Amino acid sequence: MIPLSHFLIISACLFCIGLYAVLTKKNAIQILIGIEFMINAAVLNFVAFGRYDKENGGGQLFALFAIVLAAAGVAVALAIILNVYKHFKTIDPSKIDKLKD
Amino acid sequence: MMNEFIPFISSSINDTIASLSYFQSEATLLAGFILVILSDLFFSKKYPQLSFGLTISIILIVMVQSFGLLHIESKSLFGGMVILDHLSILFKILFCLVSLLFVLFIRYNRSLQQHEKGTGDLYAILLAVHLGMNLMAMSANLLMVYMALEMVSLGSYLMVGYISRDQKQSEASMKYALFGAVCSAIMLYGISLLYGFTGTLDLNDPSFITGLNNIPPMALGVSLIMVLIGIAFKLSVVPLHFWAPDVYEGAPTPVTAFLSTGPKIAGFALLIKFIAVINSLNIASFDINLMLASMAIVSMVLGNFAAIWQNNTKRMLAYSSIGHTGFMIMALFVSPGEGYKALIFYMFIYIIMNMAAFLIVDEIEEQTGKQNLDEYNGLGRQLSILMICFVLVLVSLTGLPPTVGFTAKFFVFSTALNAYNSSGSLIILMMIIIAAISTLVSLFYYLKVPLNAYLRESAYSGVRVSNTAKTYLSMFLAFLLLLLIVFPSLIEQFL
Image 1 (tube, rainbow over the protein chains, first blue to last red):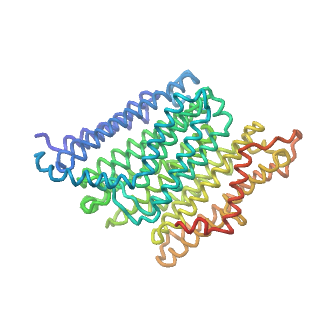
Image 2 (tube, chains in turn orange, purple; image 1 turned 90 degrees about the vertical axis):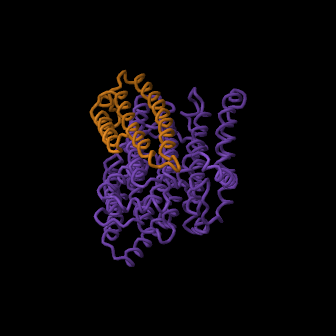
Image 3 (cartoon, one colour; image 1 turned 90 degrees about the horizontal axis):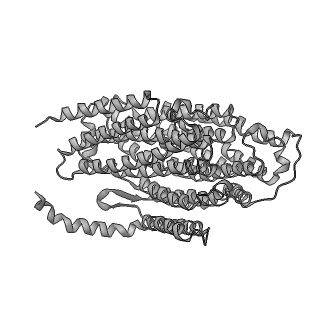
């Protein structure tokens, strides 16, 4: 059996990769991919922890809900990014700066 | 293994059925959501305002149902997924007020009404978000917390990007959606860690507290902060405020008014639950309360000082709402013993003030096309009634008599002083001093509006414009602000 710590290390790596992508990428869709990494790191955590929670199965359940909500969130965000592209002809967040102090 | 669960099936079904009767207002919202979609789909050509009528009647029904539940002390529903208590019912009534004003705002906003997409979908989204906010106020389980939060977030992203008329609006919706998604992903990771530490998702389960007490403070601190990041995003409190000015400026004004009240107050409902959990821990080396207090202080300072330099009115109100958030965190901090009375009272007044302020800003923009403070010259004569209302609302936002903003601020300050006298905590004293100073500072930017509108003349002396429904609505709200200082018991009797 694979020990719990292996899962946790992988999920921590996934989370950090996702956060790195969010902070550095110059493309809104790549940022979305980074967010997806972070969500899936949490989902992996839930499933790994859920193994020790036989009574309620809360972890597995939460993982299912999180996957569905992440899909819904990505759908909304992609629609919004499409709108941004229509107006700006770019989806580089650093070039989209009409609103600032 | 499955056979072990069979004896529990009937009892859990009974529990669910018994819970349903306490879930009327949510059921109404759900049915209303579907009804509004269907009515918009099939009858929008024939009766263009049908979805408006439906939405407003649904919200009124929900309000009546929520008032009917006020006598309940505390009731655990659906196997502990949600808990219905007095505080959450008060929050539900506040959300009804927000939604009601928002629906009227949409109805009389010209740019939303003239949009080819129509407003039917916006009403449907509002009802779904309202359901999410109700669940946020009642949730007692981490799964429920996350689902309700996402429901509110997704709906708000859609609202901000609903028209996407120009570059600014689409930019605002993208910033909001991306920042929001990152914050909720971080929160989800924090929740997964909390689940791992405790083995349960139930916030009120005793094993949740014991589990958290048994792990190293550093790990606990990191995971709690991750969860708080998700909530702080909804509150738009420093250091997670950076989206607020941009989104408030870019979004359609009715949506801005909604975002600065509804989701923010729902965030407070969640924060109260987490503070209850944190306060029952015995952590020595990691002080989350200190962190929250300093967030409140920095929000008050930054919100109020940054507002001074703003020229766009919506941006100024955005920074002032960050300052108000800091003030509300102080109210939350000092009043747990009194059942958050001062906080709820302040929120009620805050909803009226903020909605009225954005209504008036929107009306000015639609009548004259002016969005900036330095263009308001001479508006005192052109839009006399509206500007009188605006000044009243701004006086109330500052917290001066003769408006109820004074009463609300006074309640918070007196509760805070009581808390300081009984605990002698230095951090509370700090918060009180900063709050007093920032109230003074807020005078500078709020009074810029009457200064420009009344004392500075403009070369253009245009025709007087006719009063619209929005003018009457803001007159009513401003009147309410004057009335409630005489009769604060109209609200207090419910607290």
